[in-house]
Image (cartoon, rainbow, N blue to C red):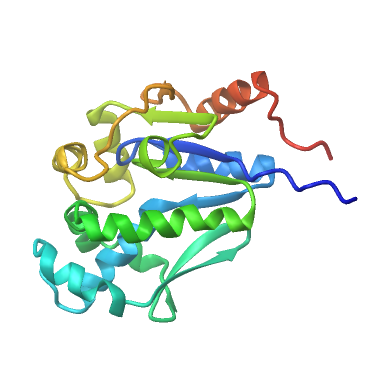
Length: 222
């Protein structure tokens, strides 16, 4: 009899904008050979579609009505997921300043979160995942054994965004993400919190990998 395949695991890495969680999650996924999932890009893709079709991002009813017409799909490229809207794979469009400014509004729409959370959970068909976002450990995969919350001071995160050439207001995004009624940005009670304010990216990655190793999860040997 062939032994049953192990159930896919999910490492949840949450945190606010510009905390470094995406870079950390991507690196951890590469080290483990797992699939990296950037859920922020999913919300950015919907936001881009909302703006591209002329919908007011502050109109939840119009956004909800348009969701099923957007043709949202996910595919995997080089070990990480990418987002397609109407057959178009989005890359640079996801970091446009207009998207940065509107994404928290669109992400607060309950129908958007419901649709994307269902899609995120379905990605376990790909196998084990390292998934970053704002509600992965608290809502999407609350029973994950591996949860991290990567944070940094507002000043540090603002400086990081400016260094990337973006002008969105970190404090405003924090307020919207933390105060929305559906799946707000919170720290899961069983998450390991890492303040990246005075740490290099490599140091944060090492801390995550070190914690995983204490629980028996280590990168495969060459």
